[in-house]
Image 1: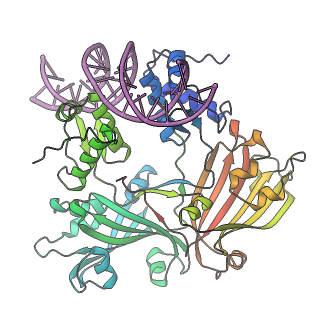
Image 2: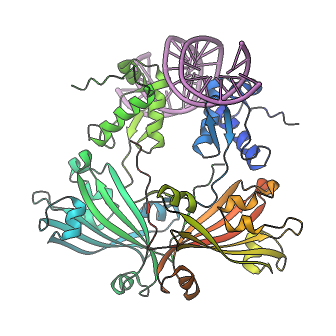
Image 3: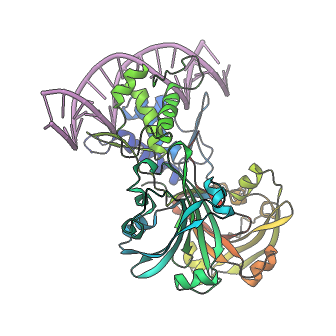
Length: 246
Length: 246
DNA sequence: AAGTGGTCTAGACCACCCT
DNA sequence: GGGTGGTCTAGACCACTTT
């Protein structure tokens, strides 16, 4: 019998229950890649829902990459892209918190320097202009895990406090500068190996594998406020592709 | 004047236009992180829409990670997570195609071997059972870019054809075995350095940085059909976080 | 002509939060 | 109690595809 019924007593919304049913049929092979699923109208009738509610269930699975709608033809099960996927690289502190690891930030350097060619270009300022350079090690359970290096335009009348630098994530660097709140970031992930200097700071050997995440952070009106990169120890970090919800 | 109007003549849907307006206000700083946006009812009235349409616009921005709804309180602009993000690591052939690079698959080895400890465990079969081992180099414009190594359970009566192995992506390996179509994959991304053997196959030096993407591929009913990993040259691949749509 | 998904409306009830 | 988002309904029109 394939007579699934929605549980009207449950607290889970109807659209969510229907999505789960359809997801199950795909995972079980009852609906195969390339197959057309029943029309929105047919699903609504079968499960005693309005079309908009059936549609919402379908749209969940479309967002998950399981289904694709084609106007005038129907809704089809996708051929999954099994050679690639979407990876979440979370904020360091958030990641550690979810794993129950205590974090500490060790401040290595805070300097006002003249912007070299690359930082000046990345931040969109003139070469030689003063920038704040920041170097930190992010530790988890007392062990160095991430090396963080950042440049940001130096505003003479808005000094950063050590208290802000020593703790927390990048966003919190700006608690004293409300007008420069980050709005958006461009992130680039590369594979790298540790230099001798980086290796020493992270307690590893030179040549060890690592992730590098370059950050270019924008405030409102596309104003660039930070450029830098974070080096993640390759032996301590790996990332899983986002799996389908329940 | 902040009197935006929707273009009722345009082909772009109303909910999409409203989403673009709100996204613009966030990017420009008019709506700052932590701010509450107007209620769904207020937006619907202001722009001459029904509440459900205004709601759809908002839900777009929620999906983009710009807004968060709180029942009973309102909808708020998110503090962007600027130290981490979501990265799309696309299928090799798809990635190359979008960059206009011609791809070629070089088959290095196809062997039927007895499953060692790790492959057997990953595939959920008994150690010593026969598995098909596959080794390929994926080339772009004649240059080796990715090393691909896979194990899959060997079915005596369903021989794989060389034609299937030599071309295309993993999904296409199963064109002759319709019952084993991939439905789902678990992917793990790590940072690594090339071994001497890998370096030679990829035309690099040993110790060069690289990404490693481990794949465990499932067909219907959670049947495991492939386990393997792909080594991406670190000097040729980098990944950007998904940016906000237009 | 019939069927499909994409969009949109004008209501409704609920759970939750704030005052 | 009034405002908010979350869910749901029963219609409607449209563009598109297939028959």
